[in-house]
Image 1 (spheres, one colour):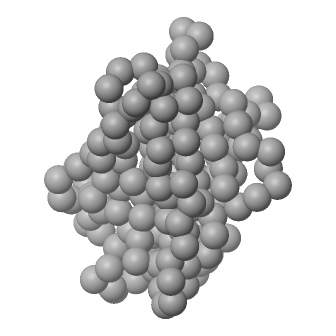
Image 2 (cartoon, rainbow, N blue to C red):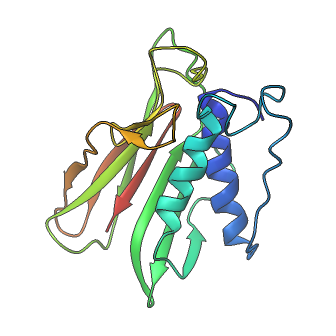
Length: 184
């Protein structure tokens, strides 16, 4: 693990995958403050891996069971979180690396069996997989928000994307080095 946004995506994916295996507690070693790259915090900032842990907590909140829909043989992960026997959230993760230059690839995923006329989603993204929170002006975001380096509170307005559901299907796009949390 390291201090980049790529580590945030790895934290998210590993956390959700481990939950599908029945693991109930994960311990992420914090390391020595200001000396370990994989820390979620330093003495004066929220580090990029914190975003992955926070996004995983958002996904799992209110859930009772999680399944993984993908085969595990690609760089795309798909999870569904259930409560009271019905799906309440889905997480789509694109772990393709986007280093910040060239074309940012995208994948399109179609979900079936959806109810309602639309799904809302919060996107976790950054300008590249190599973004850190070390004195930059470009932070990772979750639904447009990022975290304060003073007290970890969220800054900015939380925005949700809406995608139309037609005949029970919604088609979603997730760019390289991004994740999408769907509220079903």
